[in-house]
Length: 143
Image (cartoon, rainbow, N blue to C red; front, side, top):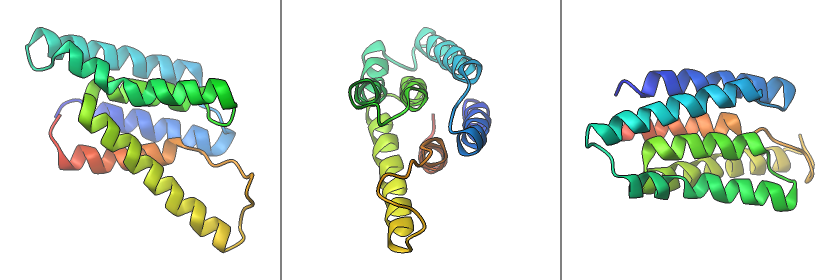
């Protein structure tokens, strides 16, 4: 439970920066990575989390980083953020988070396309949708 508030603040800060500048600063990603690593280390030492679950949680973030590298259509910061969140959430919850964020961004994309507010090649910041998915997942399960 103590993890939810700092991560939510981190995601909200990243969302504002992603919307305004279309970039998430490296220092912010580094802070999230350090917090996630410390959280996972404490959880593993307390016996509340297994290392295999941490590795499974990293899969969606790793996949997004590979997509970003290959296609240059996704941001590296988005993949790093998903990687950080996946380590804290674990396997099943990180896949739920990723799927839910993609669902939310697809609803938004469809809405702006239908209303002709944006074109097919318009870039959309991912962090706000990751934040929305985090709020839904964090509210539904205890970490």
